[in-house]
Image (cartoon, rainbow, N blue to C red):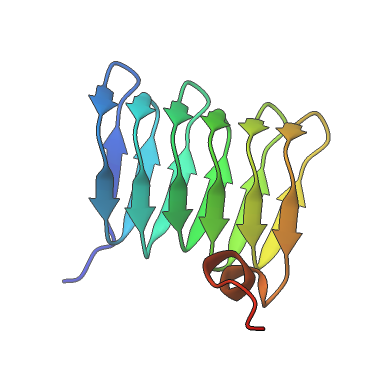
Length: 119
């Protein structure tokens, strides 16, 4: 039987360094470093991430300080605090969320962020 398990980093977890995962991850603790995945990330309401986030999708309930690059959907919930730039396929920001930075949204956001324009 295949079950889609969600990995959880609880709110008493603190990590300094990079995290890589492949499916779904819920972070509710403190991360100081890069988070990378081709899966989906949920940033819990107690979470505080300082560093770059590169995932397929991200849902933010907590705080991120750093640039976020997602291939598909980036969602900021009402209590989210996002300080940094966002590059995403689609971006949804709920009323009450805090976002300080620039956003690059659309199908070409990923390519534009990762490659310099050719002369």
